[in-house]
Image 1: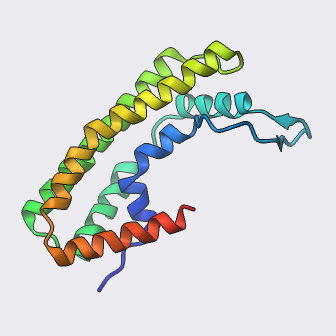
Image 2: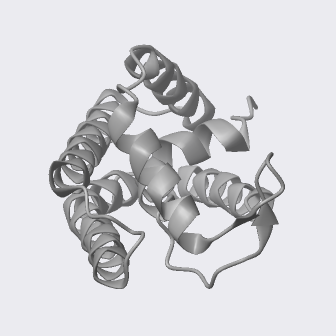
Length: 166
C-alpha cells in the first residue's frame, strides 16, 4: 500500500486553517525580533496580514494540489465518482481560501490598536467559519462515498497528520 505523506494530506485537507490561523487570537507570547525587541501579538498579526495580503498566491499551488489529489486517489484506490467528489472538495476549498483572503485583505484592519486587533480577529474567525461551512459538506460527501476500508485508511492518514501537527 502506498502511503501519502501526512504533510501532503494536511496541506490539502486543512489548508484553509493555515491562512486563518496566521491571525490567531492566542494570548501574546514574548518572542524576540532580530533586533532584540520583544514581538507582541499585534506585531505577529500585522506581519501575518502583510504576508497574506502582500504575497501573491503560489503559482505552483494548483500543480502541487493536483499531485496530492492523485496521490490520495492512488492511496485510497478511488473510483471515478470518488475522484470527482474529491475534486469538488478541492475546488470548494480553493474558492473558500480565495474568498477568505480577499475579504481579509480588502479591509486590512490595523491590529496595532485594540479596535483594529478585535476587528482582525473577528474577521479571521468569520472567514474560518465561512470556509468550514463552504468546504465541509463537500468533504463529507467525499468521505461518505468511501467504502469501509477506504475510510479506515483515510482516518489513519488524518490521525497521523493530527499527531504531526502537534
